[in-house]
Image (cartoon, rainbow, N blue to C red; front, side):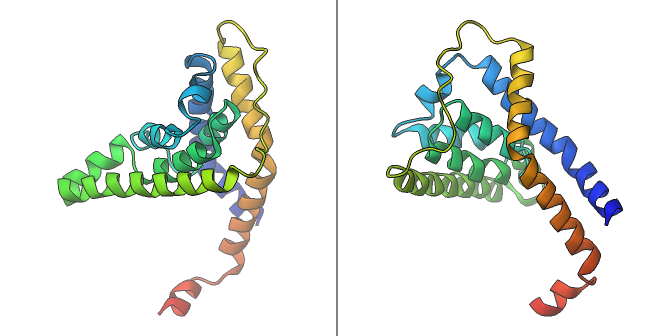
Length: 190
C-alpha cells in the first residue's frame, strides 16, 4: 500500500507542480484585479473558457490553476468553466488529435470542450448567485508589482488549501489498485 501510494504520488506530482506554477505565474504576471475584472460578471465564463481551452494542463494541473483564479477574484462560474474546459484540450492535444484523427475531429473536440465549459460555468453562476463564496477575495491591500517570491507563496498557499484532499485521493487510488482484483471492472462492465 505504501509503495502504491508513493507511485501514484510520483505520477501526480509533476503535473500538480505545473498547475501550481501556472497559478503562480497568472497571479504574478497579470495586473492586479485583472482576474476579478475579466473573469467575473456576465462574460467571465466565456473568457475563462477561452483562456482554458488552449492551455496544456491535465486534470491534475488544472486544480491549482483554477483555485488560483478563484482566489484572485474569478466568479464561481468562470472557475468551473475553466476547470471543465481546460483538461479536455490544449494546443498540444488539439494538434495531436488533428494529425491522428483529422481536423474535423480536432475542431469537434475544441467545440465540445468550450460548450461543456460554458454550460457548466453558467450553471455554477446560477447556483452561486444565491450563495456566498467560500474563498476569501479580500486581497485588495496588495499594491505594487508582484515578485517571484509572491508567485511562489501564492502557489504554496494553494497547495496548502488542498493537501488533505490530495492525500485522501492518493490513498483511495492506492487502495483501489491494491485491493480490487485485476479485471474486476471489466467483468462488471461486460
